[in-house]
Image (tube, rainbow, N blue to C red; front, side, top):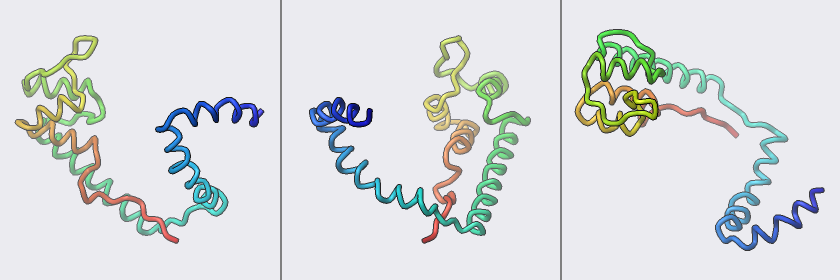
Length: 142
């Protein structure tokens, strides 16, 4: 079965420069590394990971508190409905775009546009993305 799949797909792959490049220059060279990872695993410095996780959690909580202060009330930063109610209902920010159902959009494009003039959309964007350019990432060891 595998040979049949190879015989069918290989000519199609060879006929396309982009996918062939990805296969030959990215996929195949990574096979040995991925095989080693699967056999031996990856070492993690659990103390560093725990510290970074704590720092990240504290940063996210601070962003949430800041957003609640600006809004004047607590709300779920992950709820587009609640965000829309706060931004457009309570704070009266201008509606830039609507969803297919006709409700004001709170997508990243809209928040980015609003963030130029209002602090809450900027906080929401920061909360949705990486909390800061110095945000920690898990560290692996050799």
